[in-house]
Image 1 (spheres, rainbow, N blue to C red):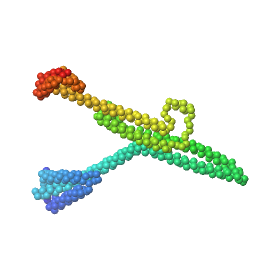
Image 2: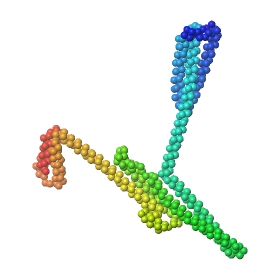
Image 3: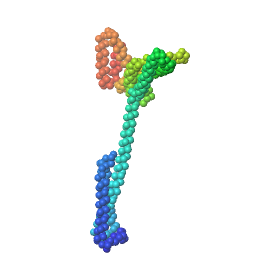
Image 4: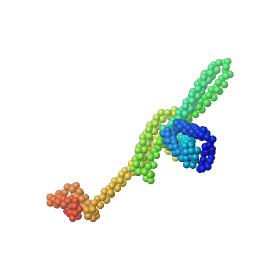
Length: 431
C-alpha cells in the first residue's frame, strides 16, 4: 500500500507500485500532450498584421513563466506532500511539475494566439480604414483639382453643345420634311386626280413651318445661353483659384510678417498669370459666338436697367469683369510691395538706432559727454561741407589738424579724454 499525504493528512491510498507507476504514466502522458499542444500553437504562423518576431518574443516569455510555475509546483509538492518514500515523492513532484508546466504553457499559448489573432484583425481593420481614408483623400483631392481646372464647367458646356447638336439635327429633319411636303404639294397642284389632298398637305406644311420657326427660336436662345456659359467659365475658374495667401497682408495675422508678405506677393503674381491665361481662354470663346442674335430687349427693360452700366454682351461683360479683377489684384500687389518696403525701412531704422546706441555707449566709455559728442559730430559735418567746396586752406591749419588728429588717435587707444578735447578744438579751428 502506498499512501499519499498532504500536510500530514492522508488524501489517497494506492494499491501498490503498479498503481503508482500507472498514475505517474498518466500524469506524464498528460504533461506531454499539453507540451506538444503548446509547441504546436507556438509554431503556427503569425496572424496577418502581427510581426512574427513579436509572437516569438511573447512565446519565450510564456515558456519562462511556465517553467517557473512548474518548478514552483514541484517544490510545493515536495514541501507539503509525501508519496510513499522519498523516491516516490520526488517522482510524483517532478511529474506534477511537468504537468503544471505543460498545462500552463498550453493555456498561455492558446491565449497568446487568440490575442494575436484579435490584434491582427484589429490591425487589418485599421489598415483597411487607413487605405479607405487615403483613397477618400485622394478622391477628394482629385475632385478639388478637377474643380479648380474647371472640368465640371467643361462638362456643362459639353452637355449644352450636345443638346444643341441634337436640336439642330431635329430641325434639319423638319426642314427636309417640309421641303418634301413642298414638292408633294407641287405635285398635287399639277394633278387633277389628287387635288383633294392639297389642303391637307398645305396644312401639314404650315404646321411644320410653325414648328421649325419655334425650334429656331429655341436654338437661338440655347446658343446664346451656351455662349454665356462659355464666357462665364474662365471667370468662374479664376474665382475658384483666388489665392488664400493674401490673408497674410493683414497686420494682425500670425506668423513672420516678411514671410507672410513674401508668400502673398508670390501668390498674387501667380494669380496674375492665371488672369492672363483666363483672358486668352476668353478670346478663344469669341469664336463660338452664336450666328443668330437673341431677341431684342424691350425699351421698358432698358429703362429699368439704366443703373447697370455694364455691357449686355456676355463676352464684353466677361472682359470687363476680368479687367476689374486684374486691377484689384494689381493694386493689392502694389500695396504688398509698399508694405514690404515699409518693413525694410523699419528694419533699417532699427539698425541705425542700434548703431547709434552703440556709438553713444562707446562715447561714454571714452568719457566724452553728450554735449561734446554732439559738437564733434557737428564739426565733422562742417568739415565735410567745407571740403566739398574746396576752400583755400593754409598749410599751418592742415599741419595743426594732422597733429591734433594724430594725438587724438593715440589718445583714443589709451582712453585719454584730454586728447579728445584736442580733436574737438582742432576741428573747431578749421570751421
